[in-house]
Image (cartoon, rainbow, N blue to C red):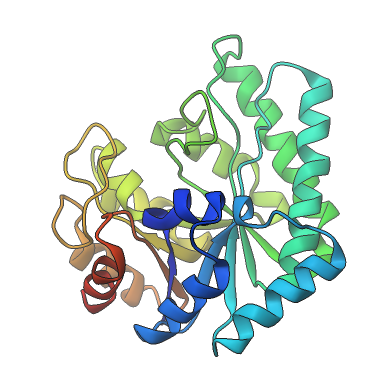
Length: 265
């Protein structure tokens, strides 16, 4: 297994330009990570030249990009917007390939009040399936996450409830959509998070290691200090022969010390 990190604690600073992606790369390398994750929101210049320059800046730090997180909204009630979401996500994969990333974290979409369960599941399956087929040539693998809510969204994730996620999971089996399993979201929203992991484990390629202070809602805390049953989850992964990237979702807002403590845990 190898360790990377999505720097949620630094999102606001990186997006606002108070911290550069290069500084994050140097920090990641300095604390002993084997790779780093980026949000697509970090990439302001998505031209070929801009992406190439950003990749050089990261690799100069002696580290590479593992995963780019993205936020497609395939459950939007407007069909024109759903089509636009697919086009935007295809751009994300172009950027991720230019950065040398192996994976892009994808979502199904938001729980729009106008979107019912049946139609939302159908739109999510359609959008995700079309995405998988349209980005195969990039060499970057889409990984679908049991997700909650990013700051970029108005509503929570359509499949925040595990039963909805599992329905989409089952209906995307034919296209080979892989899974990025988020431990914190599972601990927050699944009654039995380890059993939830077991249900999707055959398609888990990557893991978002996140922790929550409580069950019932996601309240990020320093990894290892919340309710997430890491030991049991990792034991099940190892017993299944899993040997992929653990991408920490570090959101303790304790600066470099938080990343170091999370990595040590």
